[in-house]
Amino acid sequence: MKSLRYLSIIFVVLACKSEPESETSSVQPKKEENQAITSHSAKNLNVSLLLDLSDRINPEKYPNPSMEYYQRDAAYIQTIANAFKANVQQKKIILINDQIQLYFAPEPSNPEINTISKDLKYSFNKANISNENLRLFEQHYKELPTKIYELAILDDHYVGSDTWKFMNQKVKDYCIAENYRNLLVILTDGYIYHKDNLRKEGNQTTYLTPEYIRNNRLIENNWEQKYEENNYGFIPATNNLDNLEVLVLGINPDPKNDFEDDIIKRYWSDWLESMGVAHYKIYNADLPSNMQQVITKFIQS
Image (cartoon, rainbow, N blue to C red):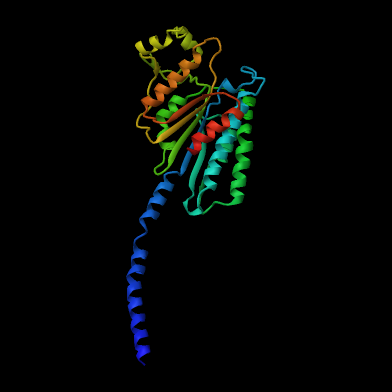
């Protein structure tokens, strides 16, 4: 009887001790869990691709026997998609919240191209992630970008590129989302020209062409001094892009000017910094096999 009474007392004491612990854990998540969720959500990717479908992709006007420029673009896009997919796959399902989409500036007149671009817009989350959806994603990004370029070349209707207007009017609405790591990948030869957007403020412009560089005599070894003293560059298109990272791929300078490559990159660097972009990289139109590592590193860093 005495032993039974002692056992009853011990049971009551243990029950009373366990109740507060259970109640506390159900109301307040552990601090470490909160930190992990916050840290992981910061790595949710929002990737935007901006394609320049100007005559730079024309294999007759700008042939390259080692690999055509539009084929390089398509391979870059596939590398970006692979890096994006790897980022999704390494997460716990409950934390997946990543998106990728593709834009043009200006929009192509061919409706088929615009339809295809919709098939390249993906948003993965815990509700729709599956091996089948990832397989379709990989297949689409392997096949459809090439089809877009081939259709644009077949149309043979090149209206130029208006990257400046896209940055001015659309980048904040289209490419920046809260609680995401926002990445904009611009595929361009570095030149910007559209007949409906030729603004000039002093020596700053919304456009850049080989002819403009030659006409302004930025073709000699003192080009940098002249550039700085006369305030050349792109007109800032917007501001406060501190929540956007930019990767520029495909720079292809006119070979007739030894300083063209440096000039194009100076224009772009100054422009991106003037708009508040803190992290950016600018690369030439190198072979995709050489670019795979640097692209993947940028996406996954």
